[in-house]
Amino acid sequence: SRGLGDVYKRQAHNLSQILQDEGRYQEALLYAKKAENLSICGTEQFLLPEIEFSIAQILNNMKKRQESRMRMEALIPYMRLIGKKEMADLVQEYLEKNLTNDVN
Image (cartoon, rainbow, N blue to C red):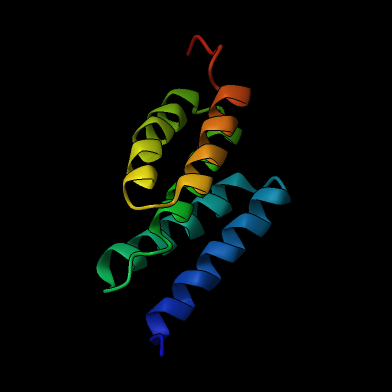
């Protein structure tokens, strides 16, 4: 069974996605970072790649494109390495659609 920390991590991640959908990027980033910290400090890190992708999307929406692109470029090979190929493809597609032709 999963621990309470895992429940909090999932809730923080879900809340960050809802806030992002509402355009509340500052708050979304706060909860995504909370989920990230819980994941790094916890024993189970299976959700960490998805959390990192959420953070990158939030940063992109906050016009922090270079930071967003750098996170995604680091995340794609990591996801492939740990067997999350479909997620890596999704991040690659997002990167190409939203950040490839960026000058920033």
